Length: 176
Image (cartoon, rainbow, N blue to C red; front, side, top):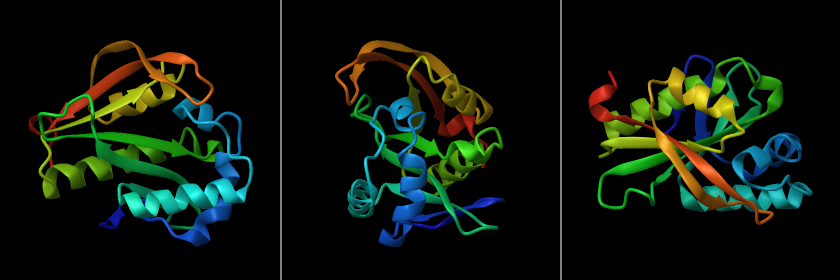
């Protein structure tokens, strides 16, 4: 897993020692549900998720350069909605104390640049739930185009069925 640097952040592999930083945001009621998962109940749950991230090799920790604190995560996964093309899907979560500072947009741009320049990827998509308009704004700021809304396409942790709002960007639309 490559370490990716942006102006203010380092996107790096997760470490088990990051558990307190993850739990600090993953326990909050306005974080996990916006991404489809329930808030973490304890640090053991955060440690289990970090171990899963480490083994998947698809999810980076977002570490602030100035404080060395992990404030979120960003992943680049296979897009199961596009199985026949060279596609990836980006997903992210950020501690609310850092919202509104363009940290996620900066991280998404760093990850997109990496994917298009070093991986064999032609399209990167991003999805969010209709109530999470901030994520849609991030995709728009990063040059992604709105594709449409996939109705009743996700079942989240509590069994609720939700729509997915889809954005994407093609390699040809991104200037390295």
